[in-house]
Length: 197
Image 1 (cartoon, one colour):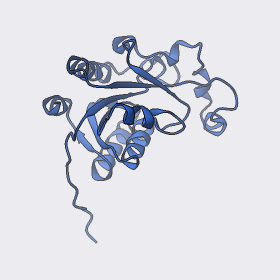
Image 2: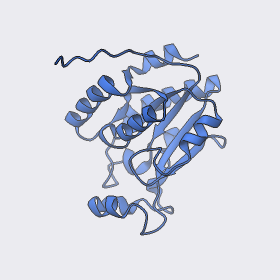
Image 3: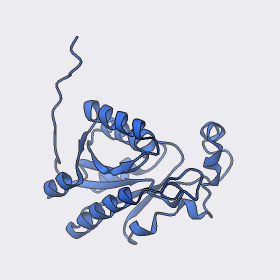
Image 4: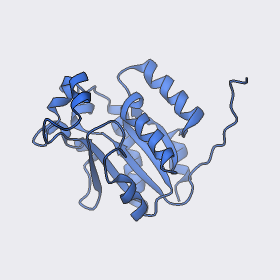
């Protein structure tokens, strides 16, 4: 059996939205046990954010917030550092370099996927979105889970390569390779910007 499955690069289809996955202080700052300093990823997100706002295209942010001990118990038992992500914590706030505008949706999630247990799909449908440009942290975790679920909700998914990051370079590379092979187009930020309607 051939290892190279034929795949089609779909590009941006219809109306795109920018989905910034967990670009929060807890993940963009090494002061938090969950985070790592990633100024290049933040800068790439800022470029995309400016372009989407300029064109009046939808922008959605996600954050991880735990309001009580019952939420995501097993996930938090596995990774206790997640317990710092409470609603009153600075760590759940979007990175100040990417501060959301008042009209931009912030989706609170408790698990890896931005779709699981959230209103994201309903929000995207209400905005008539066809294509998701996914950015954020981390490539091997919440970004990948969101990309797979995006495809499973029948969105065309594009990953902006320089706008995603992971503290583990091998995991980052392997997951980009895997997502590009099966679930999404992994493309450079410049290419995304050129394709925007």
